[in-house]
Length: 315
Ligand code: NAD
Image 1 (cartoon, rainbow, N blue to C red):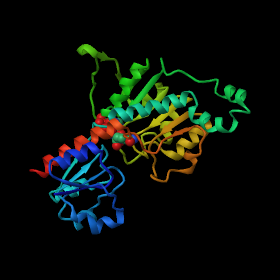
Image 2 (cartoon, rainbow, N blue to C red):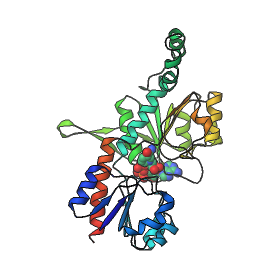
Image 3 (spheres, helix red, strand yellow):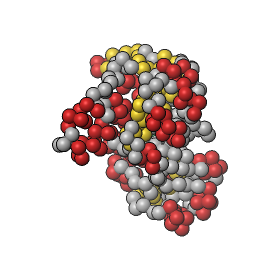
Image 4 (tube, rainbow, N blue to C red):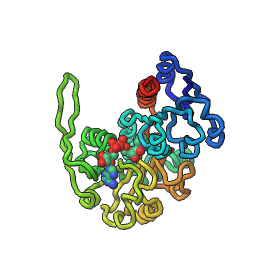
C-alpha cells in the first residue's frame, strides 16, 4: 500500500510505516496537481498546508485513510470524508507543550521588548546604545501577574502549568468545561495540585495582565471591539490558536492607542499572507505559525500518526 506524506512526516514516522510494509512518498505534490495524482495512493498525511476538500476526495476513491499531523482539521472536509467511508485521524496532544512554550517565548519577548530591540540593535546598537537602553527601561516581570487563559483544553492547560511555574496567577475560561483540577508530576512520583480559577469571560478580560487564547476557530472573534474595551490598559495578548480569534483590525487600533501593550502572534486571519499592519507593527512579536514546529513535537506527531495509519489501514 502507498502513503503520500504531502506535508512531510518525521523520519521516525516514515521508518515505522516502512517497517510495517508500506511505501511512503514524501514528495510534495502541489495543491492543483493533487486532483490528478492523489488517487495513486491508499492514504495521505497532511499538516495544515494541503487542503483536502470535497471535490478532491470525490476524484480520489482509492484514498482510505487521511492522517492529519497536528490538531486543527479545518483544511480537511472531515464529515464529508467520513461519509464516504474514509477514516480521518489526527494527533491532537502531540504538540501541546511546544505550543505552550511558544506562548511564553512571545510573553517574555513582549515584557522585555525583544521583538523591538532585535530589529533596532543591528541598526542603532553601536550608535545609540544608551537611547535604546532608556527605551527598554520599563520592562515588567511575569511573576505575580495574572494570566487569563481562554480555552482550557490541552494547550490551555499546558500554558497554565508553565505560568504557575513562573509564579503567575492563572484564571481561565472555557465554554464547555466545569472546574478542572490541574496537577503537576514532579520527579519521585510526587503529584502537586495547581491552583487555577475558572471565571466568566468578562471577568477574565477585566483582571488579566496577559491573555493567551487557546480555542478553535469560531465564527466571530473572541476578542473584538467590545471585548477590547473591557481589557486592562496595557494588557499583553498572545494568539497561538487560530487567526481570526482576535479581530486584527481592532488589535492594530488597540496597539496604536496603548490599550494593548504588545501582541505575540503565531497565527493570522490570512495565512500565508498576514496583514501588513501587523507584520510591520513595532509592538508585535511575530512567528509564522510554528507552534508545533519543534523536534520533539514533530517526532511525537510522526510516531503517533504512523501508528494510527497502520491501525486504520490494516483494519
Ligand atoms: P482542545 O480541543 O484541547 O481545547 C480547546 C478548548 O477550547 C476546549 O476545552 C473547548 O471546550 C474550548 N472552547 C471551544 N470554544 C470555546 C469558546 N468559544 N470559548 C472558550 N472556550 C472554548 O484544543 P487544543 O489542542 O488545546 O488546541 C487549541 C487551539 O490551538 C486550536 O485552535 C488549535 O487549532 C490550535 N493549535 C495551534 C497550533 C500552532 O501551531 N499555533 C498548534 C496546535 C494547535
